[in-house]
Length: 133
Image (cartoon, rainbow, N blue to C red; front, side, top):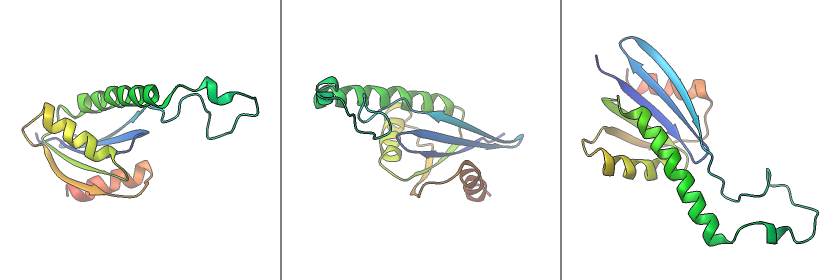
């Protein structure tokens, strides 16, 4: 039985839709990667010296890269059962994951990489169904 997977991904979440002979399943994986840790939802602090509480850029970049690595590893662990993968999303994450997949799984499971806008989970599932039809 062939298992096809569609993956919509950005740096905040991944939506994986599995289409096989036994039906369809959707799974969401949230990323814990923060571009600017220490700030909440873009709200500026009213306390003085707030900038001193936030880590320096170099350490932030390293922490962000480590968090992304763990996030991509979690996504890849779900994709292990796939016979073919349709990869799409709005930003750089799809290209980063494609490169990581090619490094760890050289059997070229990715059939198509496509840029798309933000989508709801049902829209993602419909697009994956249509692609593998």
